[in-house]
Amino acid sequence: MNKQIVQIKAMSKAFPTGEGEFLALKDINLSFESGEFSGIVGPSGSGKTTLLNIIGSLDVQSGGEVCVLGHQVKELSARESAALRSQKIGFIFQTYNLLPVYTVFENVEFPLLLLKMTKAEREQAVLKALDWLGLSDKQKSRPAQLSGGQCQRVAIARAMVKNPALVLADEPTANLDTENSLHILDSMQKLNRELGTTFIFSTHDQKVINYLRRVIRLVDGRVESDDLQAGV
Amino acid sequence: MIFKLAFKNILGYGWRSLINVFIIALVLIGLIWMEGMWFSWLNLAKTQSTQWEFGGGLLRVKSYDPYDVFALEHSHAPIPAQAGNLVASGEIVPVLFSPAVIYPGGRMQNAVVKGIPSQQSLLRFPSQALMPTEANPYPAIVGKTMAKSAQLQEGDAFTIRVKDSSGAFNAVDLQISQIMDCPVPSLDQGTVWMDLQALQDLKQLPGMATTLALRDQSLASVASPEFKLIPPNEFFADLNQMVKTKASGQASLFVMMIFLAMLAIFDTQALAIFKRRREIGMLSALGMTKARIILLFTTEGALYMLGATVLTAVMGFPLFWYFARIGFSLPKGYDSFGVAGFNEALKFVYPLPLILFTLMLMFLLTVFVSWLPARKIARLMPTEALRGK
Image (cartoon, rainbow over all chains, first blue to last red; front, side, top):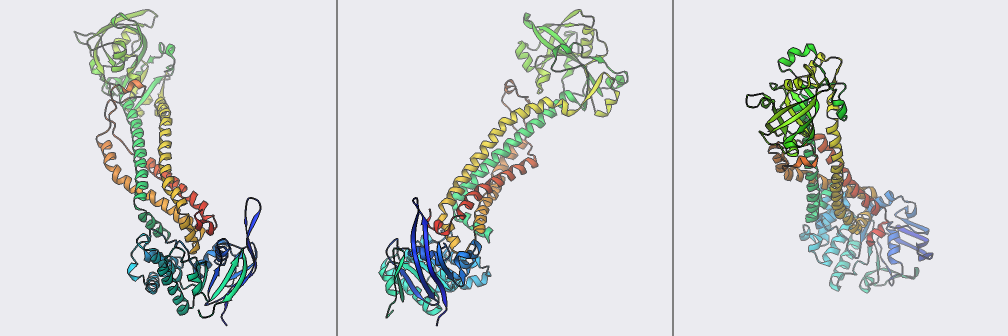
């Protein structure tokens, strides 16, 4: 049996509003095992991104427990949660969020700089990641010179380069056409199979959903269903 | 790592960085130029006052009060006996002051008449023109400002009247032998110069003087109890005060220029930092700590200043060199604005402590305007920063 890397118990998240507070997530109980290729799906405003942010320690829950890779998210200091993200979690965003003044190589290299790896180690890891994503010929290009699909592949390479235990992908195909979306999903599925990296998606894109082995449906901040997809 | 990233960011932002650096460099050049001018002006004014009036030291009768016209009548004392040889050899230059009334062109005008030995060469004053000749037995010198106010020209004669030691009024006709271009206003405005001996005779004050200019301060030992040694800081008090007053105006300009530079940096740095919120959110998501994010943006600010310093050296050097070697001449008539003028080109000196102070001040301000917004944004939750809100 695979090791549990995320455990969520009776978790809730409230945001303050002018009149009081808005409960974005209610009584969430979930767990993820290493090597999963799972997705949190649901309509806009259902709380998918909020849940993903809490798992990624970019945000903290209002109630309940969230344990990620052995760390209670709420108990982490800002420095500790930065260290957790830096060492063990990779992020992929809908808008790529590449650093515009850096080349593809430098963008992918950035997480490794934070890990204080040597130059040779960094170079080896970056070239390997770019090779995996088919971007070897683009390493000197800047994000503005790339297509949307290529930018997202750079973002995946950046998330994968440090061999994270967990990759969180927030609507990774939302800005891509079908062909690029499928290409990206193939790449991530390959990484999941060959490296055993855990992927958790947040999406409402059917193309992504078709790739997921486990689909967690969120409606109005509650888990409506949690199903394994046969044949994926 | 931070330094390298900041450097890469600055290079990456290309023109925006260059404009930022250029504006800071322009302000630095302006500030250093201004400081050079004020420092050199004060220096030149002091040098000229020393050369024309102060010499290597100055003894003045204790009863003299430059702000009391009535005290002037009695502001004299016998030249000390032990100074006799030194006066004869030109090591000490006695000057006698007296209130007077002059009648140029039939008009009456109050003035101060000062007698100086025509043979002296210690002071830069053109006293040789006071040497009596057959054609002009009572030569006089006035400065350009005095000549203008009294409507006098070279060769003009006018009557001067003074009160002698017995209280009687004596008068003599003086003839202008030279109109001097004097950079020290106190030696020009309202002042008529004549030979010391002639004035002592006219005042019936033989062997009397108001001041004794010394070749060097060691000669002050000849002073009698009626004279006191004027220290340079007392002598230059008025000049320093005037510079201080002018400096307050300069300070406003200084602050304004720094404010403009800060506005430029704030525009490019602070606004850019706000625009780069998403980037800051991403850095945070990638695991960069808040302290490092703040340090990154603050280092960018410091690098702008470093670049500006280099650009200042490159762009400013020809200008600074020109003003140091060729100098800067004030337009004619500048004296009439009440500023201690100078009749030669002002060659700039750039005092190192002032330049270092300016650089340090600009550096701290640049770092501050970079640190402030970065700190504010780094405090946001990464999710808020990522949304770019």
